Image (cartoon, rainbow, N blue to C red; front, side, top):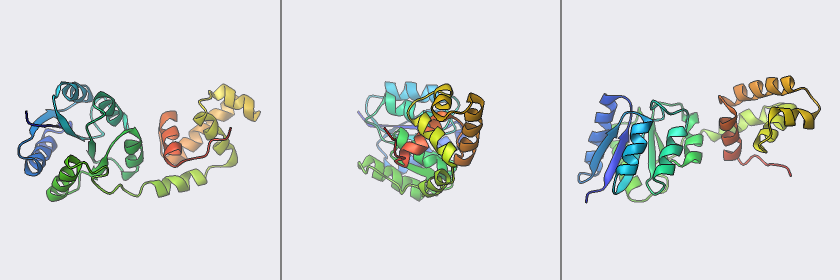
Length: 206
């Protein structure tokens, strides 16, 4: 049975372009397409020999790197190559969630084909990751001391009420610091803030 490569993108024209790249890189592979995260997960589970997933982060039903996490959970043995118009800052949460590589949709066809070939060959990082950690590290370094303490509390899994108690401030003040630190980090929720901190190895005090 031929290996299956899943192309998951909500734009039919770009799915077709990725399918062309797949056929150029792996002529014998069976191409399966999906336009939503739910369809992609179902297709991944149904595939007998899933060799690779090409994934757009903007799939309906996905938010941030949640699509990577869902597909990695469904088929952890299959490498996931993100091909997305998302900002390169999305690379680190994608890697943290289980992606093997990250390509911009602006990449040309030979570049995408080469990345597919390397991914199928078992290269753990089929493409160079965008240098997204340096600006994130600078953003964390720019947090105020209190914002940093709030972030550490979030890393420990504490609720705002618990963080407020530990720091001797009101819960409303904690919420204000959370809003400020998420804005500085360019993230939209607590989970993304945790992924950013963990990806950079932010030390967690006992």
